[in-house]
Length: 201
Image 1: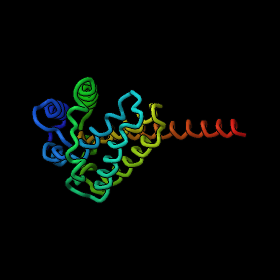
Image 2: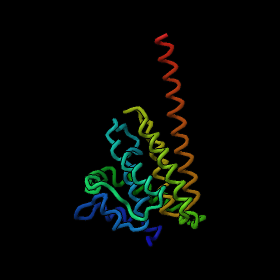
Image 3: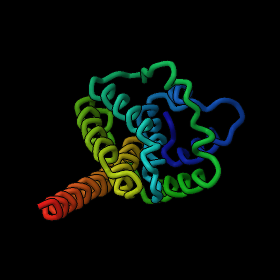
Image 4: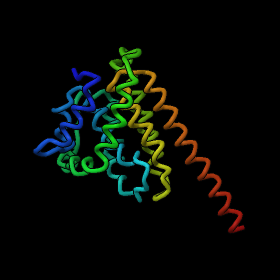
């Protein structure tokens, strides 16, 4: 089993190592944590505080597919061949890598196992997967270049960290951030709809 305090180092070593770094490789490298690690890496890009212009939608589609597998209790990740071959290394190295590792290490320093047995419960993990799907859908519907996908995506990333670190307090933080992001999207969307109605009317 992966040592909680070593996850950031393992992640950094894997992303900077020689050789291919594909979605398919993650299952072998991170074993039972592969679902959470894969979703974390996929959603870290839309969670970055920069407009993505919709280019991350493919990551979000893969995230929903993997989360659906979590809902149904699969033990290993299944992906279509073209997704399994998708390289992650070039996306995560450079400026993104230190940003990712720094945030992961922050949570490692302030985390400890809390209600860890919950995270091994199949029903609980299925419920978390449903929440991940909901937050990811919020990131998808956020207007391009608005940056509104950041909070729901960050909520997903932190939820995945809570699974890796087995810390329910980290989970609560992820739920709050993700829910705040969804609320912000709904509020701004409603305000924009009212503005357009008034403009047209």
